[in-house]
Amino acid sequence: MSNKTKLFSDSDKAVIIQDASEQINKQLSSEGRRRFLKHGLTLGGLMMLTGCDISSNESVESTLSGISRFNDRIQGWLFNANDLAPVYPESMMTRPFPFNAFYSEDEAPTINGDDYRLELAGLVADKRPWTLAQLHQMAQVSQVTRHICVEGWSAIGKWGGVPFSLFLKGIGADLNARYVSFKCADDYYTSIDMATALHPQTIIALTYDGEILPRKYGFPMKLRMPTKLGYKNPKHIQVIEVTNRYPGGYWEDQGYNWFGGS
Ligand SMILES: Nc1nc2c(c(=O)[nH]1)N[C@H]1C(S)=C(S)[C@@H](COP(=O)(O)O)O[C@H]1N2
Ligand SMILES: [Mo]
Image (cartoon, rainbow, N blue to C red; front, side, top):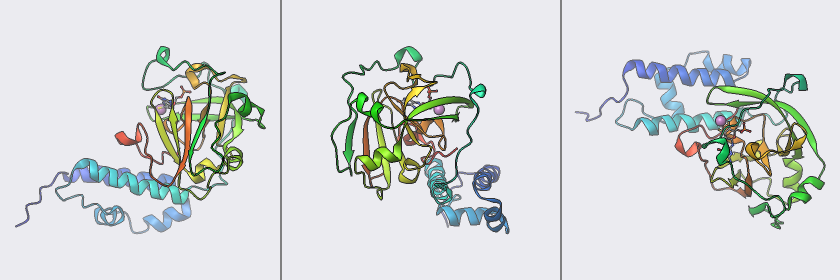
């Protein structure tokens, strides 16, 4: 006799399947959606696709993280380097722009811009550290985009700075590497796929609303990506590493989806 115990009730399974099919539905183009959902997504189909046996004696976490990894792959496949996130008129900017971090606003790190050095690591030809002045000397762009936080709020802001793809090319980064990871001054860390790193709207943000990036929003620099959820946008970056080893992230290692596309 099987010693397998059922961790999921039938109604749990229904919720998981519904959630997964909603995610897929959201992410597929209408043509892909038609193809994918033509026969409907069943528990069996989901188990086949994710490689998870949901009815077996497996921890809920590993089943869900299996679904999350599956979701990463789907999002990675569907990510189109030429699709631009919406941009907005300045009149639509949210004022004041919200602050968020894993601590309160007065605990945001205080960094001296004159002493600051951006460190480079991993698959990068030129690992010389960068001063803030050097970053400001590069060609600057500016964009008004929407920041979406999984905690249930979104806000429109204006960030200015250096296109990240230009920076990566300038330092001789291996553009075929899988990941770019970020270590921050406040012990936060996260990582992104190379396609998103090279996306035209991904910028090293040095300003907010035309002013030097305020401390609470990530002074001296943050990575701004309108194609990714808030937690993928690291503030107070100290080290950038190009790597093929999966780097994870502060929230991602606690169960947030790694790809984190918006
Ligand atoms: N260094 C660092 N970066 C971070 C965080 C953090 O706690 N520390 N929080 C993330 C989350 S969850 C959000 S929503 C945004 C908030 O950015 P904001 O303060 O500019 O709104 O920063 C992201 N980047
Ligand atoms: Mo967030």
